[in-house]
Image (tube, rainbow, N blue to C red; front, side, top):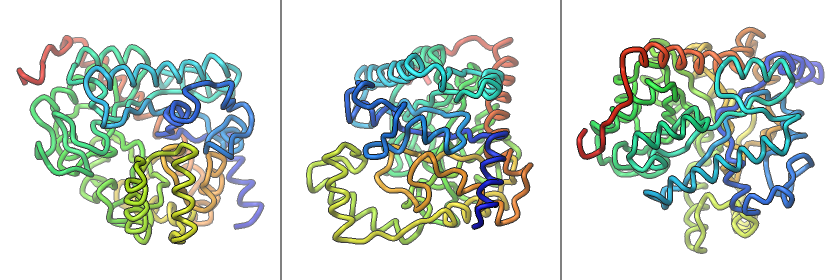
Amino acid sequence: MTGDRLAEARALLAEHPVVDGHNDLPWALREQVGYDLDRRDIAVDQSAALHTDLPRLRAGGVGGQFWSVYVPGRLAGDAAVSACLEQIDAVRMLLDRYPDRLVAAATADEMEAARREGRIASLMGAEGGHSIANSLGTLRALHRLGVRYMTLTHNENNDWADSATDEPRHDGLSAFGEEVVREMNRIGMLVDLSHVAATTMRDALRVTEAPVIFSHSSARAVCDHPRNVPDDVLAALPANGGVAMVTFVPKFVLPEAVEWTRRADENMVAKGLHPLDTTEAGMRVQRAFEAANPRPRATVATVADHLDHMREVAGVDHLGIGGDFDGTAFLPDGLDSVAGYPLLIAELLDRRWSRSDLAKLTWHNAVRVLRDAESVAHDLSTHRGPSLATIASA
């Protein structure tokens, strides 16, 4: 890769910045410093502790970010709702503290306005349908607070949808799960199918009246991991209008990393830690394991291979980027922080992706899918009131 190619990538991102579908900074701030932003000031370099800070977001050409308001599956009911609200509050604290760089965006028009102002359009995505505690009223409340997508599950099944990484329980979506999708369509909240079982993906595509997204998933045909998207689902995205946002997590993009990560996760559990623990203590355990067991190295080219395949199957109008920064212990070489996006764009330029195709990948597809969801919601809300369904009645 030449310096000229990297300069070309940076120039493209200055005009068409990245909208990233998934960043777990809020949970990292909770785990590391209890949301104390004085102790973890992202206005300055935080590379010793985080993948994300404002200088590196600028260097990476990021213009829009879906901040994950993640809740782990071990929390349920009111505890899950409270934790989700605390995550939303953390995002609001970031917006209040850094108004010159970050601005709340709840619509496609607000995303475009942020781009014109040179600020990062900040949206929120609730990761895990257990965050609504089986309540459509809670779903609507999260939408009013600015949440613009909900990932139907996380790593575990919930009471109405099957996860990709749990034993099947509903054969996809239950009747109430289908009602959740319909209500998300009605209010304009994007249905996020990352983390869900393939059966859940297909059920959601059958039920939805609006485009769906995969906020951080790659191609199963390239790396056979259940967190990735099968080709038949990718092929269904043009008819749906949805967007699949490639993720950078090595175990989802590099086949050789799948088994290594399983052993690393088992080591964390044996030490009494959660596999996704990115606290200082958790990372010490991860680094010690890595030192004793050198890991297979994913690269920028590994991620580009997924995008090449996804473009072939789904088409360039249905692709995006969702790095999963600060939600994973390991990342590909060259993509170890939010500053790395220009390297990916330069790799794709080397592979003869056109500027117009890259502009769709980085910015336009994500904005379009939110605008389309808004349009569907406007139409549906004219003849359909709020759903009063409950999990018992569905």
